[in-house]
Image 1 (cartoon, rainbow, N blue to C red):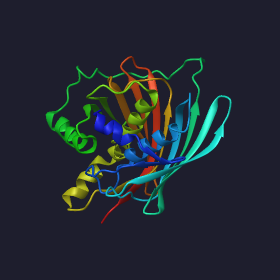
Image 2 (cartoon, one colour):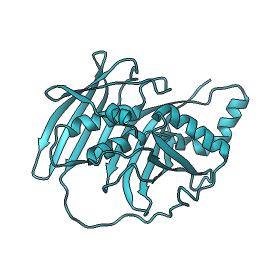
Image 3 (spheres, helix red, strand yellow):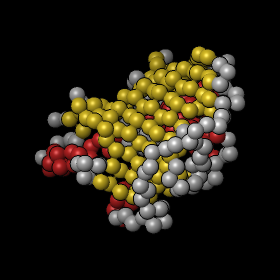
Length: 278
């Protein structure tokens, strides 16, 4: 990730426990959700010493305006012997657009286990259609200022195991601090996650397009992320996403992030609006 984008995620302190993040037009109708998530996590981390974030639960309340900065109000909920808790409210135009509950944990040794996962071919062994690669590169260039290298691996339309997988890493070396690494992963964890819930409906989507209808109205409602192990986002990681459920005009998706050795470093889930139009 370029230094510009690292600085973009680093909300600056304007007074005690209040931080300000700048916004950008990244090609989406509103502020990109990963921006608010990454900046809020960084703002919360600025009020914690000697502990790293291990989980964050966020709600998107209103569309953000990319022409206006965002202020992050951090509430210090608790500082215990091993854990710290923070609550962050993102304010824009005098109204909350997002809130976050986050937990931080000091480093400890403990039991090690992770569900076994069949890793796909590595980033240098992956063969994808050029059209598909061009499409994802175009999307990533808009959202990430060409800061990431993204290589799609597989889109499985098997109803029994639908999924989207891609390898990713930052183009440039990142700072060594764990807080930046986790803010960067939070930032990109919103990329394509909710899209996986539409895979089982590919035929329906194509039919709607052929009939001249719009596909779907989609928007993030909430987002949860857990960090399990240390990682570096300037090394290759696999992001594997899959749908869990769709009902009541909402869809729920899950994502898992693995390093090249196949270790699970982070898990995420997201629920979003999934409304048919016209």
